[in-house]
Image (cartoon, rainbow, N blue to C red):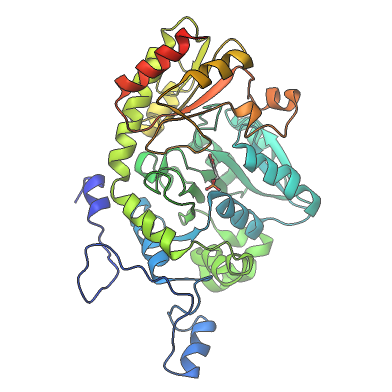
Length: 410
Ligand code: PLP
């Protein structure tokens, strides 16, 4: 089975089920029974593979993790309650007070807030840099740098860095790359081949299959020697390449408690079956809509890496082939015009999610980035005139008609 759509629908490994159910069983249970006290002791000590308590692991959640592992070629996966839970768990396992991270200056607003507002008071330093400048990334690294963090296509700026070059810069200094691959997923971008250490995905988006549930994933590609991190030394000596996943499962992830509900894992397994079809369709739609937008004189700027005139087009072709994701941003005259345009849309919904089956529009400056001043937004490349469109799987002709009638009203 070479075709990835076929593989997504017919995964190699399936949860054992005595009735041969074609849908995976849903184990919506908190705890699991043991034959003996000795067995439960061995399970707690990690000497016996068993499900004990669903905050730590659960058969339905494990099935989702296995399927993501097969899809991505990673050495292991941990599924969590949201994308933000995945980012914070990974970061808390690797960094601490007195350490720093080299972080993209263009990121999803809540990730910016996590690094600046939430982790700052714990003594963690965020060094925001331009990821399209690998030399600047390398310069920002010092002996206390614990990771480099960036998004595969930044949300909402649509910036695309050369991941291989960032990985190489990190490798020269012994620093792993954590990539937020939410906008592409392993279906579009092969993070393992690019040398990425950890990939983070918000399962809430493409994977959930139409905004059915929130979820997050940490994928370890086995590309980094965790023993280089002082916090990980002991774990690395015992567990080698599995050190980070084991430490998360037995300590950080277990203790923070941001586990994925079994029902949400079950929904996301179903979502995975149609992942390829939905991604293909939304990418085709986003391409058609962005091309149309570039020809409209009321639109002053369109940012989509699939456009030939995008400064990120050639690196995007190299990294993604012919699929450039389902998100694009464009600019109108100013905020008032953007609001009038959004309020005139009849098909496209005003909502804050992305990679839903439905097309969704948002004004980033007054929503996701509303906690930041105008200067801070400018610094992050979030303009007041910008709207972000998450293109769904409707007919692109209907989407363009809706955009056209709304533009006529501004
Ligand atoms: N990463 C990116 C690029 C996102 O756009 C989002 C949410 O929009 C997240 C992470 C966080 O995901 P979640 O909402 O599942 O916590």
